Amino acid sequence: MPRAGLDAGAVTEAGAALADEAGFAQLSMSLVAERLGVRTPSLYKHVDGLGDLARRICVLAVTEMGAAVRDATQGRARRDALEGAAQALRGYVKDHPGRYAATVGVRPTGPDDPLAAALERALTPLSAVLLGYRLDPAEETHAVRMLRSMLHGFAALEISDGFQMSTNVNSSFTWMIDFIDQGLRAAAADVGHGREVSSQIPPL
Amino acid sequence: MPRAGLDAGAVTEAGAALADEAGFAQLSMSLVAERLGVRTPSLYKHVDGLGDLARRICVLAVTEMGAAVRDATQGRARRDALEGAAQALRGYVKDHPGRYAATVGVRPTGPDDPLAAALERALTPLSAVLLGYRLDPAEETHAVRMLRSMLHGFAALEISDGFQMSTNVNSSFTWMIDFIDQGLRAAAADVGHGREVSSQIPPL
DNA sequence: GCTTTAAGCTATTCCCATTAGCCATTTGGA
DNA sequence: TCCAAATGGCTAATGGGAATAGCTTAAAGC
Image 1 (cartoon, rainbow over the protein chains, first blue to last red):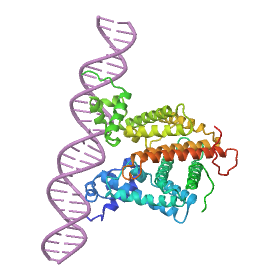
Image 2 (image 1 turned 30 degrees about the horizontal axis):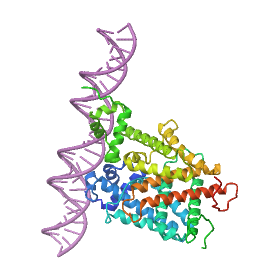
Image 3 (image 1 turned 30 degrees about the vertical axis):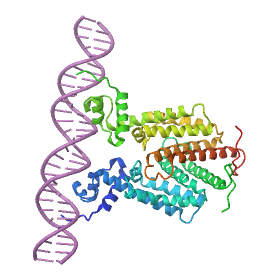
Image 4 (image 1 turned 90 degrees about the horizontal axis):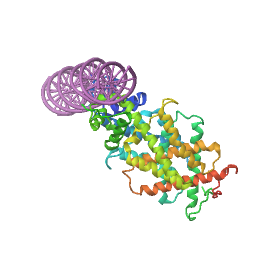
């Protein structure tokens, strides 16, 4: 019986691929083992059960999403960066629905949870995008959270569109990006101008 | 053996309660049966298996969320209505995390799917809120989708906050509501004014 | 080459979903 | 009131997947 040369990473990758192809709900130790040409109990040498596997897929997905967003925003600013981030997320969810599904509703258990680090790294490019808008520092956190909510919403919309295709989803996307971009410009313009609403294009 | 007097609704309700208390992942026919003081196979007289039960819980949740949003926006307009809707959703997700979890990633199978009707009814109050902003009709669909994404994002944030409580989540919520409100005012002001950015408070 | 470690295996247990088929209870019409 | 159909609950049994125990052999280091 030759060895398969597995490790935790290979098992996670196989599980992620399976989830993408068959749906996250179909993820099972048996199917992953079959895909790897190995018996089910062998997986337990690398992974601590189905729950652990799902968690690893989640960390993988968050890491990959963070990388995709980073790549898509590199060298761009403001609206361009915003659109890049949103489209990167959208594309990722479309290409890897199972991995994305693995991330919903999962929370880091503590500061030493690898997921916490992955999340932090994934959020960095979002902060970078916001930097370009020169917001009031006190608003940064709010803006990051909003952006995160928005992008999550983008993804959810991409998944659960299917029934009311009356209007093109693409144009809704760009509309939303415009909406956020203009709102952020306005918020930036507010800095140091009191609280009145104003939307002049700020310098830079 | 006296009868328990069950029906599909009672089973669904028990499943929803269980999901809220123990987590949607823990939902099982056995636990629902136990909670109802009945043997597992008896449930199959009312419900077509675990998948069907989950789906019914989803429909229930969508219906309840729609009602909560409707109640919270009744008699209010614009920012008030927006805040009402967002807080209603937030409260619902906090009080019924299991039911909410039952809704994620589920899509109606066709126009005759009860879920399709429930979704449609749930989205109506959102359209009503937007009506108050007097948007360009062509933008309505985009705005509804954005609002829906936003509210979904609100809920996700409420669930997955837990680790970076550096800044109060409540203030992020109100910040986001302000952001959307002001953006919608700006969009409304654009109607018939060409495409330049402007944020004057529109009449009414 | 020999020892140790670790990866894979078989066998087993347990739990859960689901189906089949039985029995009792309700209900509604004669 | 009584009988018959329909209905709701039950026990028993099947099948599948997760997980554990313990064995065996391949790889790695001396």
